[in-house]
Image (cartoon, rainbow, N blue to C red):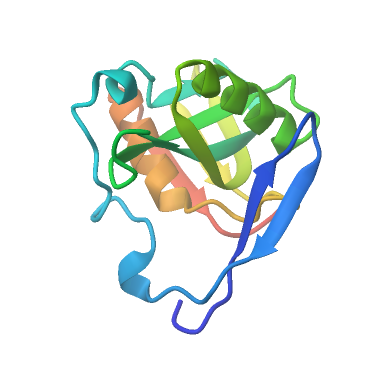
Length: 160
C-alpha cells in the first residue's frame, strides 16, 4: 500500500530474529505474482514450490529464494508444518537447506494454513508475529498449482 512501511526480518541462528526497517517501497517494487522474475535456473528449479503437511492446521511461511548468480532471478516458495512452534522454526530449517544449495533466502511473511485433505479444501489466513503477514494471494496461487484437483483454496486476511 502506498506510503506503508515494511519490516524485513531474517533469522539469525535458531529462532533469533534480526529486524531492520526498510525504506518505503513504491507499489511497483512489491513482490506479486505479476512481477516475479521466475527463472529456468537449475538451482531454483530444483526447489519445490510447495511443501506443506498433508492435513491439519499449521503455521506457514512464504520465502523468496534468490539465485546467487543473478539477484533479480528468484522464486517464491511455501512451507508449512505442524511441528513448528514458531514461524521462525520453519524459516530457520529452510534457510539452512537452501543455504546448502548455495542460494539466498528472504522470509516474506507468514500465517496459518487449514488443510482438509478429505474435503479437498485449503484456507490460508493470519500472520506471523515475527515476520508479518505474507501475501496470501501469492501463497494461494502456489497452492492452486500444487493441488489442482482441490475444490477450494482461498485466503482471508482476518484472524491470527
